[in-house]
Image (cartoon, rainbow, N blue to C red):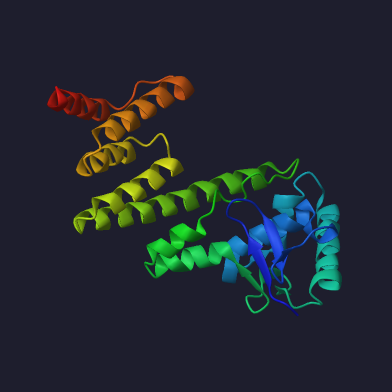
Length: 240
């Protein structure tokens, strides 16, 4: 059997043999189960918790039936029984399936920040939803924030390391990536402005600060961080 790959960063898809799987095996509840178990990893997830996430409005018997039907389909049509392990607590079999989020978190543990950032191709389960499952939606948001924050920390580590080595252009590339990840973070913008100045690009420094200020005013209705604007004023004064 070809190994299955689960992609959760930037969307939610399943691949087999490098091709994206479609049809009944990728219906939303089935994909949601994969996502839940991927994040639980070796700990697994109890049937009760899965049922509460995916069948919140059903009574216990109907929720059990829904999960049993889903598991029956998986074992009969997708993997012949090897993909899912456990009975009361379910988990994915890493001998059969890989997941980008596992590789992302493993890279962070190994302090391989560049690999982690490469693997982070977008927000967790971006664009994926299941109707009528509010706890699952909240779980997605929590995981999305956590993984984005971990990616931001990895980018910051790379940017600071590049600056410490005197490679300001490389640092600027990383700070730009950080700003793409969180456009509202004042510290990231301050570092982006400073990195632009370190490369001698004053126009880019001023442009980044004004873009940040315009974004805050237009989308959040708040004033920009005064430290960012003070830094821009100092740049302008030095030009004059």
